[in-house]
Image (tube, rainbow, N blue to C red; front, side, top):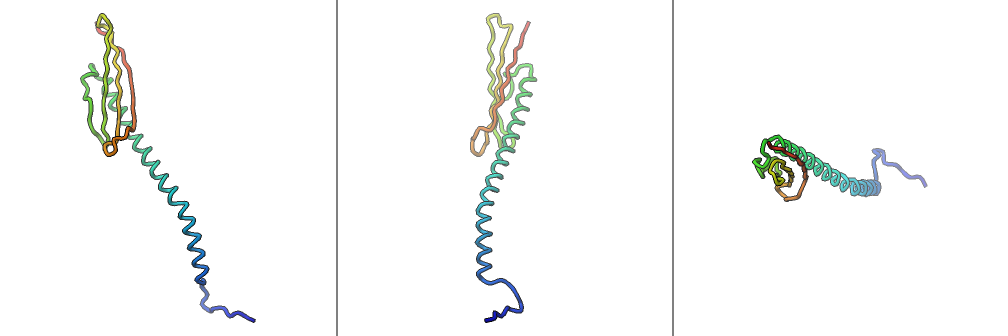
Length: 125
């Protein structure tokens, strides 16, 4: 018995179905990984921006003559920042230890993104 082939060629319905199943299986593995990678990249980018903002605010506070007069909170680039300054003086009031903490959080989720700390010692005559 001899099979006749279609002169136009092409794929059978079964072959198309199998190829669609294979493609859907491959996509079901690739898409979740791509979404996860995108989320991780977005989170890393937000943390880098938060650290840059914290660094700018920390440098601004340290460069002031009186870090305790720096603004204590604010918002920038969908992030809120808080400046915590603690000063302690010794008995003769000449030496002052100033600890500065910067906390950066996401304004939408209030999730803490970054923290930076610095300490400085001031000596007044």
